[in-house]
Length: 232
Image (cartoon, rainbow, N blue to C red):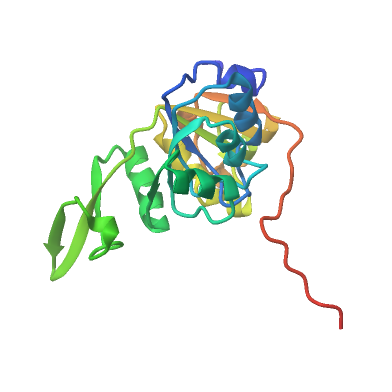
């Protein structure tokens, strides 16, 4: 199977309005910038986005929020986006906030083909409302369902034309498990190489999970909150 596509616009061409998307990354690290820009250009809307965070006002998913393309956001942290806050408080945006570990485990369950998992996080809080609670060895657990995503869009440091991916540092937090979870997984990479160029001992996502791959361009190395010491 030829998995290589020319660019982001080609990779996301069949994503339609109303789709459910997983978008990898952690904060502003390892986010699929090129694909997000392509989605903004395409103008699809009514999207459900599953992501650890919602970017910032002028970067990442924040660009899609500016264009009113997101109907529902499923995230664990959204504190850096003023437009997200405005849409949430005005009732324009549906939001499901879940514990970060729960988000990660539900992604993992999706990739493993598990319909649901029992987790401790959220027991006795608003997170538990409407969910099944069971007791195992004296402790209560919530039944958390796996996600049902149409596409997973991830960004890797390196990848080969067969779809094998290597993630770098913090970008490994959500990208690998989301890459496993999409019905169709799209990977953009900083460097695209031929099969055999990657050390198999350091491949984080095997190519079997990846359906489309392309080499991206013009990546920004953003810092979410820059903190410096005062001069002595």
